[in-house]
Image (cartoon, rainbow, N blue to C red; front, top):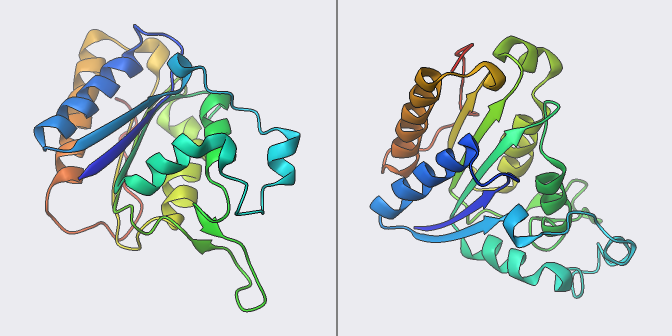
Length: 214
C-alpha cells in the first residue's frame, strides 16, 4: 500500500493535526508506505498562474511547476485528505492544490473527437479518504450542499478506480466541540480508517455520514 496524505491546516496545534496523526498511525500499523504533504508547512503556492493556465492542456509541459505533486499522485494507490471545512468547502490552499496538480494527462484526459467527456486518469487509486471538521451543523452543511465533500468524494473520486473504497468523517459544530465530542470523533476516524485499510469489498456508493453531531 502506498498512501499519499494531503494535510491542510495553518495551526500546528489544531484538532485537525490530531486527526492527521491518527490517520498516519493507522497507515503505519497497516504497513503502508507513506508520503505526507503538509501544504501550509511547505508553503505551497495555491494560485494557478497565468503561465500554468496557458500550458494547462499541454501535457508535455503542464506538469513542470508541480512535478513533485504529480509524482506523488501517480505513485499512490491510497489518497487521503485531512483539512478543515471553511465556508462549507475546501480551504483555498487545498483547492489550489487541486487546481494546480490535477492537470490533464495526470488526473484526467481531455475530451476529443471520440470522447465527448473527460476520462479518469487516477484509476490506480483504489482507496480515497476524506476527514474534516465543520463549524456548521450537519443539517446546515447538507442544506448548503457540502461542496467540499462533493468536490473530493465525487469530483476526485470519479477520477479514481471504479470500485474504490471510500471513507468520510466530519466533526460538525466544531466551534462548540468538547473533549468528549473530539474523543468520539477520533474513535470514528479510527473505525473509518480500519475499514478503509481492510481487505473487504470496495464501497459502491459515496461513503455515508448521517450523524448530525460528532
